[in-house]
Amino acid sequence: MANLQGVTWTDGTERGKLTRTAAAALKGKALLLWASPQFNPIDNSAHPYDASRWQAAFDACKAAYDIAIADGKSLMPSYESIFRTEGAANTEAIIVRSYSPSVAKRGHNVESRSRPLSAGGSPADNYYASVNLVNAYTMKDGTPITAAGSGYDPILFWKDRDPRFEATIAYNGSIWNLGSTTNRRQWTYNNAIGETGSRGVYCKKFTTPELANAAVPYSNDFGGSGMDWIELRLAEVMLNYADAANEIGNMGVAKEMVKRIRLRAGIIAGTNDYGLNLVTSVEQMRDLILNERQVEFAFEGKRTEDLRRTRRYHLLSGNLTSPIVMLSGTNDAQRNALKAQLERVVDPVTGTMYRDQLNLNNKDTLQKYFIYGVVQPGGTGGFNVLPEYYFYSLSNFFLYSSPLLEQTIGWDGGNFDPLR
Image (cartoon, rainbow, N blue to C red; front, side, top):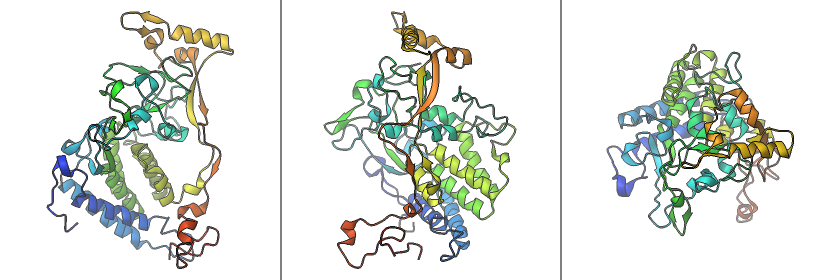
């Protein structure tokens, strides 16, 4: 941080080099990890809990936030524009890996893996939202969907939700402009014309609406969107700050950081101050922050490490499920008739189909044509996360390379304790 004081990089040729703000953010993140239950458990007699680590984490995270603001960082005004805005215009990005569609071997295929077949894509399961993620989004006033009086309807599961839901997830009949097409509606019901498979939702987050369908694939070292990858942004610095503040009893700072992120997301104040008045204890705020991170950083690769850091990883078990949409009807004949009606062209000039005129926010209309359910994506099975997974094991390749190396405790033959 001292060596990077006052150092700036040119956007064109040096984008991605670390800055003073990046160093401060990484220091805060490291001390947060050191204070968190993974390295600082509260119920391990062999390793007494050290509350002072949380104060150190708070000091570092506060400093990181203050430095970021002093260096001109701010939340992007629109959540959906975060990854679509590059260079100096992106005021939120702190650590970036730069890509390009026109420089050899500097591209990626994320656009293709996110988009549906009808828009030039080849969707991948790692961009398929789980039911757990879909349920994590609050209502538009910050109220959890499980709270009494939230107004949540599992049939109209997209209605009146946190606006980040609409910015991240494309669902059956939703507007998703791709290939420079306006008012384009995405259909996800099973065997919808122009699509493939039974994918009930898609990830919109890393797509570029104006990119022509033909330009989507990355092949022969060129193409794709060239969208930069943001590894760390101001919102993470703020939620790290909130996390540490909550643990030292400063709930005011914790709530303020979350409130600013929810304000940017478009959540309304409602009667419970963006949902924050529903939280009255450190434990409840801890849960809220973890859920906020799941939503804010959806598909950004943060979730697994958050679960490990908070020692909640081993609480996961069961099956991975994702939403699907099926046509109504009790037999194939009825379903085929509905499909034919939905896909009947009503305007031969524009190619508009009957389905594009439906109001799917009308529950009766929706249920006349569609049934919502869940599916287990191909290649996945039941899972059970074990406590030893909090620290990695060493492969035999490394163990056989030196008699001085020890296996991690909890694994076969392990006696190395990472907490010592």
